[in-house]
Length: 117
Picture (cartoon, rainbow, N blue to C red):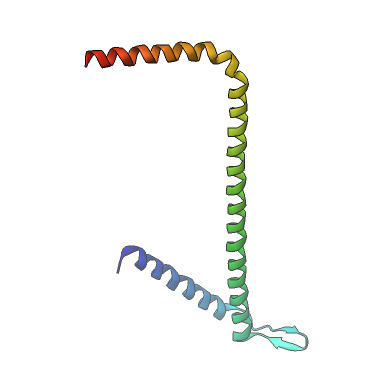
């Protein structure tokens, strides 16, 4: 058995042991709902079912929240790209002389490399 599996098994065993000990230490008072007494193992099973439903609801709520936050982050990245792209297009007329100089420099340096090789 791998270490992770063994640790998970030990954790589950400890949790069930603590649940059983808490069940044994509970008071013997009964809850009456609609004239019907709920106590002993039925009340304990109801409590466990309610905990399982609560954990499932928490898992789905956190999953949905994480998915929504991921989509919002993706939309924000797209908006940032659009804003930066619009700034680049707005500044393009100012950058044309520098782009021409850079293109000439790249053309000259490329042609000089081809001759030396």
